[in-house]
Image 1: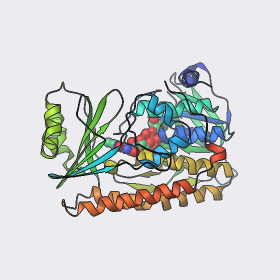
Image 2: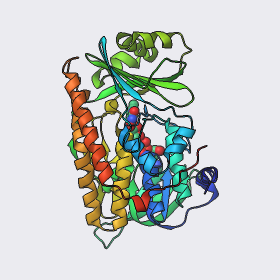
Image 3: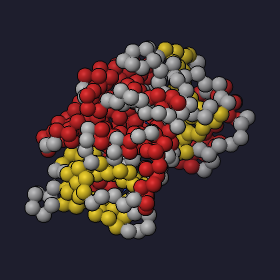
Length: 410
Ligand SMILES: Cc1cc2nc3c(=O)[nH]c(=O)nc-3n(C[C@H](O)[C@H](O)[C@H](O)COP(=O)(O)OP(=O)(O)OC[C@H]3O[C@@H](n4cnc5c(N)ncnc54)[C@H](O)[C@@H]3O)c2cc1C
């Protein structure tokens, strides 16, 4: 199916075409984790329904920088050409600014990747939803999960969902598995009783906006004692610029005058960038006050979690989307195997693949470093990401999920 027709179907589902009453899998959440999982399951022949309380093709809180693992997934799934066709600029180097010193690293061409990308979420999530619909999934927006259905006989196994549509009508759908891809404050996790078994200690707070006409080359990451910032080229000739402070400083720095707080912090780290921004029209800033990282139990009888719903880490290392795309494939593989044991294995694989990046993120998010000691932390993160990519390349299921044909762009 052409991408444009897929878009129509995703949009048109809300209210226009009621979903069926029975599916193999219901996925709650239609962003990077949920749409990718649904796409892979639908490609493997499962009947899939995706529900999201939000809207098709919209933005969400994120500075949206992809790391190599995410670009590999998009490449293998045949979606990268559409990301590029949407005008997402290639990122061919990453520059780290440590006070007055800078270190530029080229993005090496390997594993089918010769550049990184930072698509806006209204681009990336929409393309993944379009690909899910093109593979046969039903997608309903404006649909809010209310309840999980449980079997009275099979030890409380989840057997489907109850959701409310935009008109307030309530629908009951049965399924073999319910996937919670509904983000940090996951309703599926709460209703299923998914406990947190490992929690992070540190939080950072971020304020960011998007500007056109800035002089930004590749990913630019800035570090000062107790502060961080970044500039990320993205669609429509814009760059996303963010500043980050320890979580406990959010109210003091940003709550009263966010624009002033933003520019003051940026001026300390990247005066040239701050100067360029000071001469542009004000843009709407987005803020995130911080949340500790966690690993939640990711499976139970008839349910599973993917993306931020099951595993969250501080956004300072820009890795949530990359992890979500990796875990979408691990989970789709496990659901395809069709047993509770396979879902338990999925959690083990997720944790084994995530732990190094989680710990490196915790260390960087602690701000318990100076301009000398932060460098080995970045090197540790880089090694963790290399291991992650190696593992990703070993665990793929090409015949099942990978689409040699590319999804066409907008
Ligand atoms: C400030 C900030 C900056 C970040 N920057 C980066 C970055 O540069 N790179 C990176 O890789 N990651 C980044 N992240 C992390 C990244 O945004 C997340 O990891 C990613 O969005 C997780 O995707 P997801 O699909 O799991 O969940 P989400 O993107 O949160 O999507 C969840 C979806 O579930 C839906 N939903 C929720 N509850 C219900 C319900 N009850 N019924 C129906 N639908 C529901 C929501 O409408 C939403 O569409 C950042 C995060 C923050 C906060």
